[in-house]
Image (cartoon, rainbow, N blue to C red; front, side):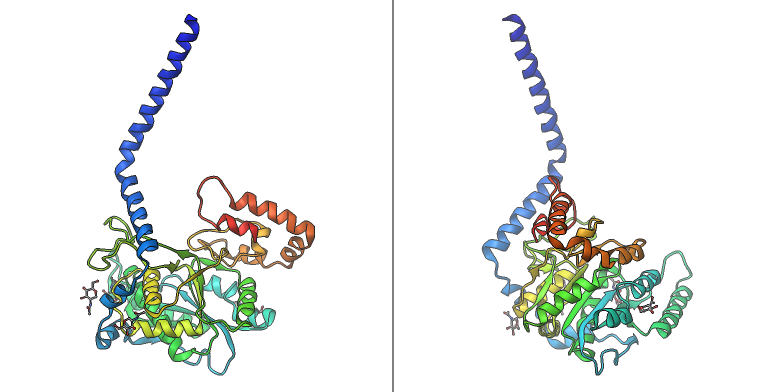
Length: 385
Ligand SMILES: *[C@@H]1O[C@H](CO)[C@@H](O)[C@H](O)[C@H]1NC(C)=O
Ligand SMILES: *[C@@H]1O[C@H](CO)[C@@H](O)[C@H](O)[C@H]1NC(C)=O
Ligand SMILES: *[C@@H]1O[C@H](CO)[C@@H](O)[C@H](O)[C@H]1NC(C)=O
Ligand SMILES: *[C@@H]1O[C@H](CO)[C@@H](O)[C@H](O)[C@H]1NC(C)=O
């Protein structure tokens, strides 16, 4: 009796201590937790209850002459004839920065190799790089450095003929200008391309999978097509420490309209044209380019759709069952050559087909994508495709 009593007391004591510990941890973290939880809950409710963003359009519409200030930059490098006279399935814009020459070269010799795509897949895909003017760095004698970098770009462009550069400063806060550059260039020089893709220069695109998907889609002559990793009901970030901080004056509502992660998404040519039209009358000072794309979408009445194998900011697990279906994966720089080789190896299709291959891959994908904790990759439902 006495022993039992003590044991109960000890149990209760342990319980009490654990509770206290948990409570104090929660209290210490509460402010942080509170802010982000509350803003997500608010933003989600707003997205699903109000879900009408027409007033965004109204309040961000400005006169055309003023909107032109976001697009009338001089071209420093241009290739107006890049698409001329060709039946282009996909125009692929890679957003890059002047100093990222190694990333561009890696893309040119892997997933962005137009010759390979033409020969191996039998379709025309045009790959161009969008960039602004080099920035001056604090630590260097600025203008000589900028001049030197621009000389290198001219040289690089002479070799490859694929840089589309405008005279705005290439910086994080000018990403929306780069977005506008892409839609305006497409409108003027490549409006007949059936699809337009915009991609970061540190992603991997499984071009054979993407091409076969787009071929399939275009055989059904789709319109209003906009696909990628969709962010729904994302709240604006009001904390000044964040890279994505947006002041209230710039965007005053609780939630952004739906948009696709800027790392990589595809639109059909009719959507590209509508977005172009939207940029002619919108205030583009909101510098988060993919959110701005969402605003353009809402003003012309197109909404994005989800494709589970567009990763957004997430990274694909390295496995042949994933390679069989992946479209994009984020965060590849050093490993891009290896990944290109292994992911497009003919063995991938062989090993993942047939009843045995499919059962094996179903199990592997379940294990790789459906984890009990969060990690940034394809969603669990991708395992059931
Ligand atoms: C692109 O692919 C072609 C044909 O497969 C190849 O000959 C060429 O070397 C590749 N280009 C680069 C930059 O690797
Ligand atoms: C964006 O580019 C313009 C034109 O070059 C420049 O004046 C401005 O400072 C840039 N903005 C940022 C935030 O870098
Ligand atoms: C565009 O929005 C910014 C704030 O985000 C504002 O400062 C600017 O005056 C607006 N431009 C026009 C032309 O209304
Ligand atoms: C957005 O605003 C413009 C100009 O005010 C208007 O012409 C257009 O119809 C609006 N679009 C939507 C979807 O409300």
